[in-house]
Picture 1 (tube, rainbow, N blue to C red):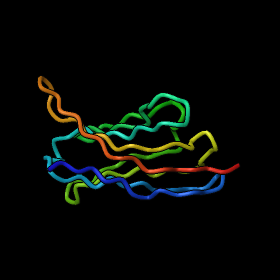
Picture 2: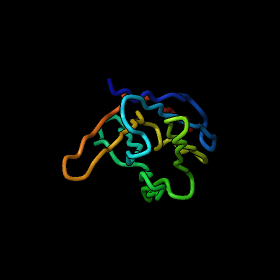
Picture 3: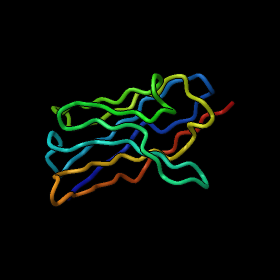
Picture 4: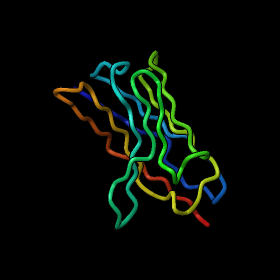
Length: 118
């Protein structure tokens, strides 16, 4: 059974920091491209950051310089360090794993709420 479990939900004031974690089981974590997505109320889910199986990273412009994605293959866990948080970062944050290329498999966590107050 594949499980992606996010943790680190929280409420912080603008300018604060939070770290999200995504613990993965049931797949070969080291072979997976991992992502953080978020969905704010009334908006579509958007890609926040990505870290590939070989460690290359991508960030949405809105979080570049403030968020850092990382992974620990020994712990089957991905992280998102979020600094200088803004009210517009308020959303449900989802962990996503993608495996393979020709027959892509996608797996999602249930999400964790992050609320930033002004």
